[in-house]
Image 1 (tube, one colour):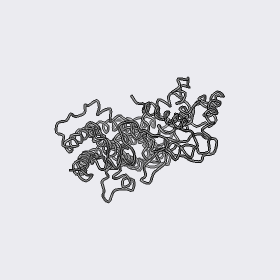
Image 2 (tube, helix red, strand yellow):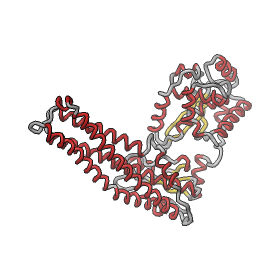
Image 3 (cartoon, one colour):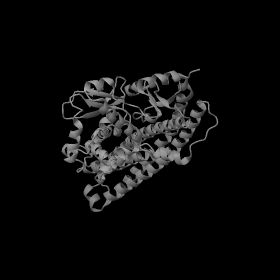
Image 4 (cartoon, one colour):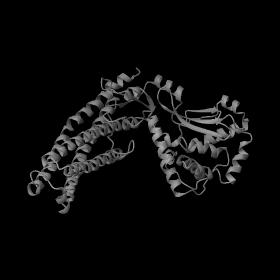
Amino acid sequence: MAKNSEYWEKRIASETWKVYNSIEEKNKELLQFYIEASESVKDELYRLAEKYSKDGVLSLSEMYKQNRLAELNKKYENIIEELGRTTEEFAKKNMQQGFQNVYEKTAKGMGDNDFSMPNKKLMEKMMETPWRGDNFSGRLWKNQKKLAVSLNDVLLTGLQQGKTVTEIAIALHNRMGQGFNECHRLVRTESMHYLNDATLQRYKDAGVRYIQIWAALDERTCKTCGSYHGKIYPIDKCPAVPFHANCRCTIIPVTNEKVIAEYENKYGQLGGLMKLSIPDQVYELSGMSREIKNTINGAIRKLEKEYIIYIDGIEGAHMGKRDIFGSGGYVDDTGMLRYSLLFNYDVNYEKVEHRMEKLYNEKIMAGKNFEDYIAHEIAHIIPFQDCITEEDYLQVREELRRAFVYGVSGYADRTRDGAESLAEAFVRYRNGEKIPDEAGKLIKKYILPWRRS
């Protein structure tokens, strides 16, 4: 009997949510941590006020002269640092226990009672792995630093405005309350991500090839989660879940062969090369010879053997006579990011190879043949293969744009665009040519993680 999504919701998703809710019950203790820290913050202020305040007001000039303000700032920083350590230890312990519970429940939900739990080293590595730009510890300590700075800002503002010690203490307490809300939101979100990591790890260990995003559908389900609900992805293209703070989306396996066949008929099969080639329509409209078509297809095949490349199609377009090829991302009707390699119908492909060699000899372009130019376009696609939303795409695009490296090629230097620096450097890298150190770092960051072993 084929197991559908609703079956896996009951067997796996609902169990993941139960573990999440149990962690939330434990998270109530976080409030007590913050209440105690808030009391310490107020106590330090009152202790100082007992000695030096006049009519309930501390003099800012005296605080500066006697270095009392700096001493109080340091005490606040120490209180928040200790709060951070306590919170981190508490949250990590709960998340790691939750990971084990979800991994076990997922394995048993899939009918496997004979399984091995991931070792502690792997679990720690997964917790330390950044997602959407950072990991739990990184985000927590950024929050703690922000909280410490804002407490000292509240203190300074209160002193500058001549507020009473009681008024300042109330303002400090309120800021600690905001700090708790931010911390609780972070722990909730990171817990859900780590639990989803547990399900995903179990699927990989069990040989699952496709997964499906599954939202908790109720009155709190947002538009973003609703739009991802039910979407299927190859397991190695699974988006980073949750999608936003307090998101409860999780991941279920796709085991229904009919559903898998429909997906593969639409998007292609997994497990090997994508076997892309120039479509007949593009071949005919471009006016290229069969020999050139075979040369370009051979270049694509070679690159696919070297790197994992997700191209959803090869298309043609009128792009003017300046560009030979093009590439880019787009959002399809289902809201999923797709990537295409473009052929320019306005270029004479019978004459263009001579032009390539000329531009290379003049040190304008890094490439000198069709393979190099295809590699250039592929380097415009690979850095974005981890992107899930258009927002993700635009963020990486801007990050790349700013990473310009001088001296890769005349073309890249003229654009002053880091994406072009990367693409041109990738061509030279493949050809064994010397590239600037900073360009090598770009390749290591954006391209090499996709190299086939």
